[in-house]
Structure formats: structure tokens, C-alpha cells
Image 1 (cartoon, helix red, strand yellow):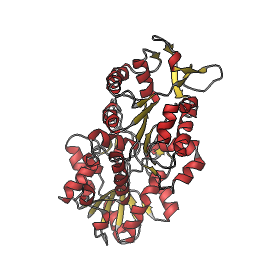
Image 2: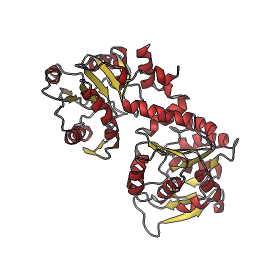
Image 3: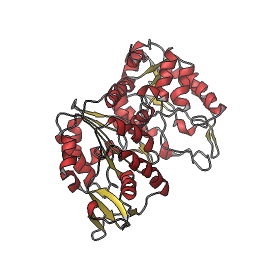
Image 4: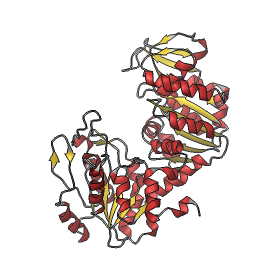
Length: 431
């Protein structure tokens, strides 16, 4: 029996009359507004399924990063609240949704679920409201805690419901709201979680040739999955700051804005890539800018990497020039691939976008490949730069848009989707 067959699924649960705690990944609010509703829309099938089967849903998600890493203080802010999500669901599905409020400790967030939520639970059971949406889980002290507060918050969450459903593929971190309820309640994967896992397995067992495009702002967070990716792919295309660090090390360039720690990690990757020199594709033309803030005429220029001498000092490298994709090696690798995974914005958008736009257009010309895009910024830029193509791809079976690009990279780093903490917790619950 395959691991997917062993996965407890929401279709296996008796939901009628049950209070159903559902972990969503609705982390789409920035400065009090929804920046993209894609992640919400992808979870609606699970929500509708629960209601249709007679379940009483209690939703929760994290939003943003309200916890200060240096001080540990949690800021409960309207900018990172769930109210915009609730409003969107109310308008889209005509549901009566209640959001409980809890006492807030100064600079420490919420200590616990207040007993006042019990009144809402009664209203939910009696049909006076359609669902409850809990406040941002990261407003609670126990959500990311490493001590007994984590267990305490997990038990409190489980105490709200009869069943737990995890539909938050993008929230792979082992936090209280993603894994703890599985220790106390019958637990199941939601419909979106199942769909994401099925498509993630295509990354692990791809049709060949397999091309991966990976970019990022920090090399040290990408090196572990890149070690695994380079073993699986036929070709790897880098972008963003990690490509800058790669270039700086390989060609002995001094590029402004690269963290020295990234250079140290890049040395390791350059040595690894040298063992299979045909795998890493290097865009030949880069865009240097004197400023990060804007694209100012006369203050940016295009360089051919082959013309740069060792020791050359550059200002900020903010994009791969679109001319790079006329290179026959890169063009052929993209157009001949059978599987393409993209978790990349190549330039520093919104001002330096042409490299990303040209890349996505070239990938779209490949009509035979199964094309998978990571969520977050990758998906947002696809939608912003190529809205017509994006809309046509939503119903194209050759395309799949994940809700969490970081989750895929983490799964690749771990060697299997079944090693993700949230999925492991569901499998352990069934056993």
C-alpha cells in the first residue's frame, strides 16, 4: 500500500453534526488587505465539503510574522488579522462567520483561548452561525513556542472540536496548530492537501528531462534543497540573490548587497555544481543597477558575464536580462523538458521584471511539459506580469500552481513529502 493510500482523508470521516477544526493556509493578508485570494479559493472545496456533509467548521490560519525574532514580543495588529479573509469568505459564500476576541497580554499576544469562545461554539452547534474563524494563530504565545505553552495551546485547540482537518499544505512548520491537534483528535487531510501531495509526487518522480528553476534572497536557506535538487534534475536554472552569490564565487566578482554568509555557502554549491558542469544553466546577461529603489535611466546597464574580468566590482545585480533566454543551451533545455518546476522570481520586482517575464513566456511555449509553479511571490508575479496566460493556465492540465513553494523545497530537502511534519502527524494519527 502506498503512503498516499495510507493517508487519512477527509472523505473517510463522518462529519455530520461534528465540530471540525480546520487548519488552513490563508496567509494572504499584508497591511490589512488581501494581496492575492488564490490560496483562499483553493481551500473552498474543503470548506464546502465539510458544510455539505453536516460538519460545523472552525477555521484557523497564521498571518504574517507578528513575533519579533530578537525580542520575542508578539504584536497583535489589525495589519495581520484574519478579518479581511473573513470578509472575503462572507462575500463569496454568503456565510455567517464569527471571530472570537481574547484578552491580549502587553507585547506578548494571546495567552490562551478564552472561555468566551464556548458561547460561539454553542451558536455554531445550534446553527445560529455558519462557522467560527479563530484569530491569527501566531498571535498566541504557544503557537511557535518550544516549551509547555506549545502543548497547552495544542490541547486547547483540540478541545474545541471533535475532528481535525489539515488543509494547510503551505504551513509545513511543526507548530501547535499544524501538528498538536493530531495527538488528541481523529485527523484527516483536506481536499487541497491531498491535491498538493499528488502533484508534489510528480516532482519526486518526474518525467525526464526535468528542469528546475530556483531563486531566492538567501543562499543559506536554499542550499539544503539545492543539494537534493541537483541530484534529481537534468538542468537547474538559478536566479535572484542566490544566482548573484554563485556568480560572485565562480567568477571572482564583487557584487554589492550579498551577505558574506551567502558567499560562504555559495562556495560549497559551486564546488558541488562543478561535479556535473552541464546541469547548472547560467544566464549570460545580467542587469546591474546603481540603486535598489528604482529603474533609473542611465543608472542601470547590461553585462555579458563572459566579458567581466576577475575582481570586477559591480553595484546591485537586480535581474537576468531577457536576452539570456536566446542562448541555445538554455532555450533548448526549457523547450525540451518534460517536467518543469519553478520556484523563482528572477529579478528585483516591480522595477526589474523583464527576466522573469521572458522566462515564464518561454516556459509557456513548451506545450508538452508538466509545469509546476511554487506559490507565494512566484505565483503573484506570474499573475501580475502575464495575466492573460495566467488565467488560461488555471484550467490547463499541463499546469499546476502550488499554494506553498517553500513546502516543496522543504520536502525535497527531506527527501520525501511524507517527511513533512504536518503530513507525518496525520499518518501517525491514523496508526
